[in-house]
Length: 135
Image (cartoon, rainbow, N blue to C red; front, top):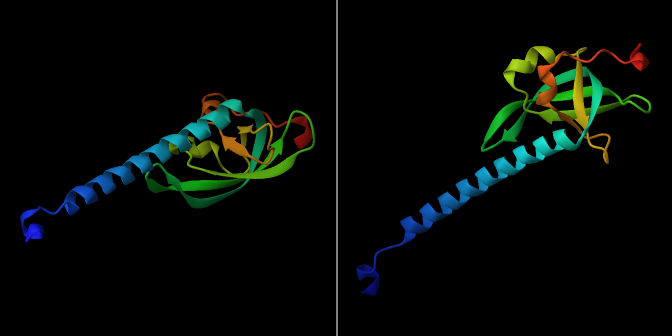
């Protein structure tokens, strides 16, 4: 009898769960954007040549977007050249500059040289000249 009189709270619980899920997804998107921006700021600017470009998908914010996996030949200021790859969403306005054979400046983590990050801030200036070790 009490069940017939007391209203069901299932809608409220489902609504609360949905709001919590959306909040978590937005928080993750902001966290991921912050991590990429931080990696670009703290990384060492390094000249790189794009060796290979493959399409891929990655989670950007709350949706799956088209990303690129770039295989790069990195030319650090000190040391021998080495290969690394990165998978990131690259804005359409910079796609013409990100092609196999092109030169970029990427940010490399000081503690993890294999960890390269596409740094959009470097795209507003002319591409770097190939280093002497690339000749």
